[in-house]
Amino acid sequence: MGQSEAVATTSDFQQMLRGATLRVTKPRVAVLSAVHALPHADTESIIREVRRELPEVSHQAVYDSLHALTAAGLVRRIQPSGSVARYESRVGDNHHHVVCRSCGVVADVDCAVGHAPCLTAADDNGFTIDEAEVVYWGLCPDCSTTRSA
Amino acid sequence: MGQSEAVATTSDFQQMLRGATLRVTKPRVAVLSAVHALPHADTESIIREVRRELPEVSHQAVYDSLHALTAAGLVRRIQPSGSVARYESRVGDNHHHVVCRSCGVVADVDCAVGHAPCLTAADDNGFTIDEAEVVYWGLCPDCSTTRSA
DNA sequence: GGTTCTATCTTGACTGATTCCAGATAATGG
DNA sequence: CCATTATCTGGAATCAGTCAAGATAGAACC
Image 1 (cartoon, rainbow over the protein chains, first blue to last red):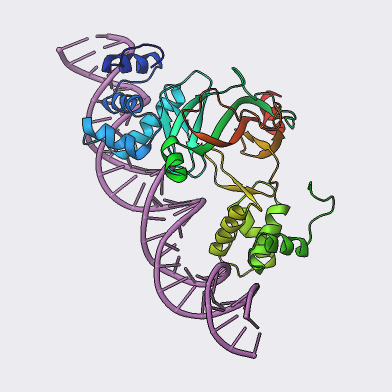
Image 2 (image 1 turned 90 degrees about the vertical axis):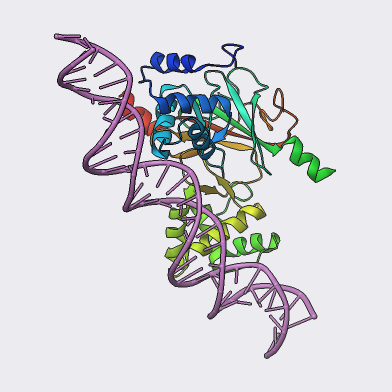
């Protein structure tokens, strides 16, 4: 979705892993594939998706794979307040998220301010800031309609 | 710190509770006091602080009080990724947080962009956005010094 | 292609934060 | 002061995520 218009294939995932100096294993390829197939999915959903391909994988293997992929920068972990950890495949660009207060669904948004939005705090208290993470809270179209209509 | 220059007293806390149509109970006053005394404290620290006044309170009472106070808008709950829930007494203004990647300490910052920074996303996907939450990640002065010096 | 090394995977138990439940208690309005 | 009803207590339960030890299987080299 971004680097190519075609859907990523298994060999694409294998190349991604090799490119990150990670061993190519079935669980990892399946986890990477699942994160690409289910954007913003939580761990449980990812485990379910992975087990459609590999019914025998342990949840531990999925957790390990997610950690390895996150550390390598192939996936990104996000965790809005009050929600479990979620993972997404869109990495490297500067985008943020909208979270629905009602149903918890997450969507991508680009910040209006520019490339490094809000990265310069008014007073940084002496901190060395390297990233600004923005979470917008509100209601998704479905929940919004349900409440007002 | 903001509405008054003096340190808030017990009767101040009681008035806050009544003003929010909440019953005035010892645990609630103590919890409210603890949140004011320990900015950005996690639940465990708050429980410890509360028990210095009321050694007998159950952790459940503290959790309930924190939820009630949060729902009433008297305290604000924040939860950076990978951290437990933290609470702060500074509410109503538009400020954000810096979190140290190394030690996890949290500090307040005002956003450089203005009053409602980044509140207008480039493409809101049809969401009705009512709040933008910003978390800056980096190193606090102490951790920064330790690593570079 | 075979061998060895070592990271990865499996299984299963465990932790720690938070929530649920039922009964006892206490704050509020009259 | 009494009744009503939200709140508090104590303990069990849940759930995401982690830890540990042994089994397994990529990868590099011969």
